[in-house]
Amino acid sequence: MGAAAPQVHQGRAREVRAARRLRLAGSDPGRLRHSRRSRASGVTGATRTEDGAVLTRRSSRRIDALQEVADGVFFSRGRGSNWVLLRDGRELTLIDAGYPADAAQVAGDVRSLAGGIAGLRAVLLTHGHIDHVGALPGLLRHRAVPVHAHPAEIPHLHGEVHDQAGPLDVLRNLTLPHMPSWLAMVLRSGGTTPVHLTGATALPTTGMLDLPGAPEPVLVAGHTRGHAAYLLREPGVLVTGDALVTGHPLSRLHGPQMLPEFFAHDPQQALEQLEVLTTLPAELILPGHGPAWRGSPRAAVEIVRQRS
Ligand SMILES: [Zn+2]
Ligand SMILES: [Zn+2]
Image (tube, rainbow, N blue to C red):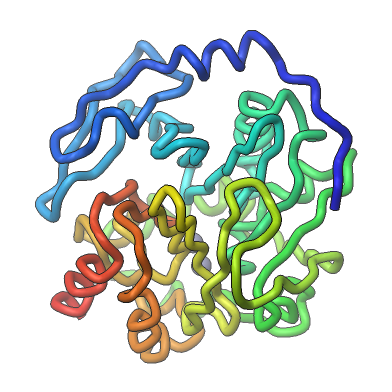
């Protein structure tokens, strides 16, 4: 899985080092650094939800992307979902990869942090839904990078089983808020194009991986059969994917919550499996949808249970 040493783009590296610190209510200002794309137009600054400190900046048109939320941990928000980059020196681990139309943004994030695709050691997936794997064919078109997921998710990634909501599920849920605009976003983002990652391979199921950021996979099944969260033990960060999110266009809730049930392979199992998260040592949650959320997994799960 080794890769040639990447050439760091000095301009980008300087930009990241010089990242402006944000002072956000309820957050440790030393841990959150905005690293780029401070788009002048429409940036309104940090927001806070009713459920606690949330680390985000919004523009009038899109989420302002790629924030360093802990040392070497970068959170990026695409047009409909999030991904995470872990940096160690000149090398990166990417966790999830947005919709197909997010490919340029994901590639830009990789370039910003590692100088180019050569710095990407591996891609880890929380699960195989199109809004989390969509950019990979574009991103990896010219360079093979190992792609891994939990063993139980591999048949889904290979296209052997199908755990994705389909048109009938959407029709049954047309009354959810903002469904027309969400559907339009999915169509614009290539969300109806199947992506099968036949080269994806299984991760070890316990312990830290020998990859930048030393992520630890944690099986949290239900959303899909092999959905995994990733614990970053040293900075105390939990990447929850779609097992637990903090917002979604189809939801009126802010803060920790489950996705609308029709997205889940087994909604009841997804709820029960949250118990797995409650003992994990983290103080920052990076979800697959919605803003980062400062608090422990136990506190987040308690909020979800109160709402379910
Ligand atoms: Zn999903
Ligand atoms: Zn998702």
